[in-house]
Image 1 (cartoon, helix red, strand yellow):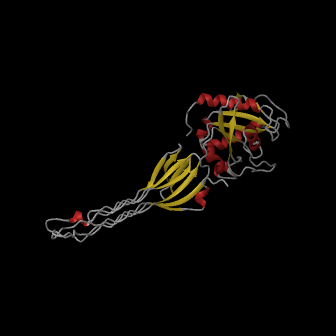
Image 2 (cartoon, helix red, strand yellow):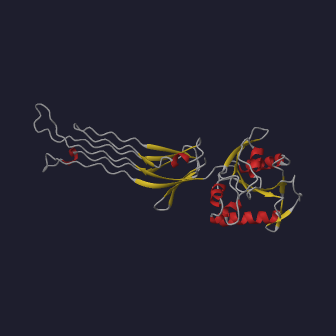
Image 3 (tube, helix red, strand yellow):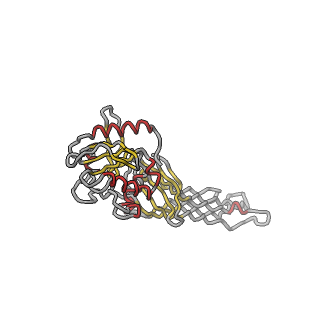
Length: 330
């Protein structure tokens, strides 16, 4: 099961209580206060882990609390600090404050971490309250409460290539042809109900990640169909492959509608490098040129089913990625 949005509650640890204590030693009359401070409460830290690919665990456990600090003791002994709680999430997870509706951090690198709530300060013991007018203070501070927060975790896949197309355009078939991924494939709309990832390998052992994400339909930017389930993830990809179906009508109209949905959701998507592929040439007539946005654009005729033209497409994607180098996606 692929889960890409989750809501959780996090609470940092409470600070330990300060101690009220007085020295009790033989031959030391009226030894004075010696109550130690309480320990600090633990923080809650969110950390990105490249080995995780889903937020599914957060569907079963939604409340997380760090350890509280322990109380101070006599002889000026400080309480132990509470342990920090580290919560692992997939790389590409966006953290949002559910109440304030603000983005806290975008965890895009393995090992990157963020302190979402901080533990409470430990209370001061009575040793701190001694004065010339109060030689025997019988007061100490309670520990402070730890911070609390309601979070939204939103996962956006990190992939080199994203496949864009209508339902049944052949994205899942193409992914299985280019990689060893085995997504569900059928002849009805919305076969892909969650993103699939595959690792493409070239003859020179170079590799890159391809994402097959649920198909677009008209008004997907409004959330219709699986719109937002798709569009959220395509923002991370470095290259877009517009996969058009030659058996489903004019390919120019298909491309125009796909571009429109991306433009309405996030205009920056159309600034990404792109490749246009015409699929199912084994079933439909192949045309070598068509106009896109008023200009001629080269495309790659392929058959994801038979493999015709797929190697040429794969090599083109590798060339673009090589030119991009280590440039990061937004």
